Image (cartoon, rainbow, N blue to C red):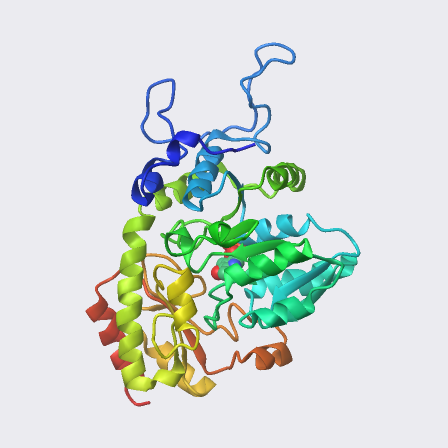
Length: 389
Ligand SMILES: *Cc1c(COP(=O)(O)O)cnc(C)c1O
């Protein structure tokens, strides 16, 4: 099981991002963790090995990534997966038939699809609630509730959950609090310190940061959950290849350099949009006009580069999307390059229309992932795309 090196704990975030979980390679002293392209490991004698038997169970490149992200999240154990959705699927296997889950109504489209189209068929029940309201979470809890799943800030409506309150509700209910921390990254938000039992990531996004792999991660600071997650990781087998782990690990080395720039660009672009298009139409937790700005300041140390804008209609959204030049029209987020998307038809295409309407996800909504380019170019791009609206 991939447990962190205790010696990595005392360093600052940037030092941890670069070094945590890694040791020079023993054969030649290579400073970079090698990509261990192997499926199996030679055993010294029957029943004697170096701790590695078969690569679904353990791979040294994967372990370096698992330790690194576990430390960044303030956890003790990390588990890497082939995708964020693979991480989610594996967490859900902690449940059994008869269990109940309280889930945020505005979670990632793929999380909703997994629940709605697959997990519901296994005798697990789900109640979707607006997790902005802690009372709503607590009211949905029953004696069968085993897990509370929240995403904060949410994709794409940038709604926040009070993690401390959610943690208290989970403890009182004897349920696990799982937080999808993909949007904030551990640089801006550390859910384990606020009461979460498991943190989940799509490493595809900010952790990798360069849009060149798909991956997921689960971190915990509970030994009992670590034992179960390790069992499920090996048993379900949704593990990432070593090359993808290497790329994610290369990405986390600059997380502390990239996130402040995403944040700086996000704030500047949100402020420009609010002035050009109206405060009420720009959804960014860093804007004072965001209804949960105070909570954002309390539980996050920055707001990142994700902004949603209500253009008012699908035609207006298309007007903007078709004209963007620096921002590329694409799904995904969190990379160094700026992306723009239409959540209703892209990331949330699998969410039924009535569910979208209920949560306020309209056809006029566009979502921006501000990269780390020069902000003047990002604003000039939006200026020319909004012209005529
Ligand atoms: C992308 C994403 C996921 C799913 O991750 P994949 O790596 O695409 O499988 C889950 N949650 C959030 C918030 C995401 O943005």
